[in-house]
Length: 117
Image (cartoon, rainbow, N blue to C red; front, top):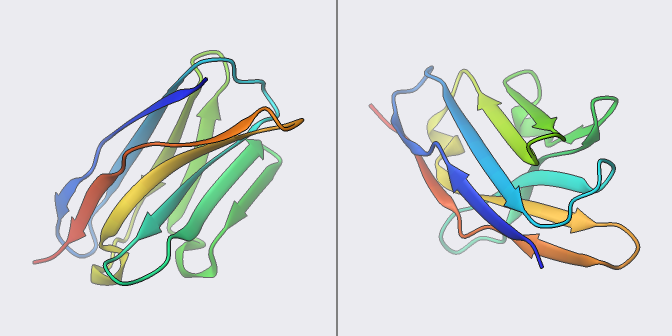
């Protein structure tokens, strides 16, 4: 069993920055996939960024060049640095951990990010 605790959401002006953090409690291996997704009302949850290792990251086209995902395997954390934020980045952001070898797939409870002037 894995528990995910997110932090760092809030209100920011367009062009500003926020850093989201997710702490995973449980058995996480260094090459399990960790990531961030987001969802707005009436829409499906969408991928923002995932990371397996520093050399294996995936970003949504809409955030490339603005967001950076990173992880600390010693602390079982995954962070999302969000720069040059736009109003369309407003959403609830969810942390996700997908364990290899069928060990499980876990979601956090979400943190609200609002980009508005």
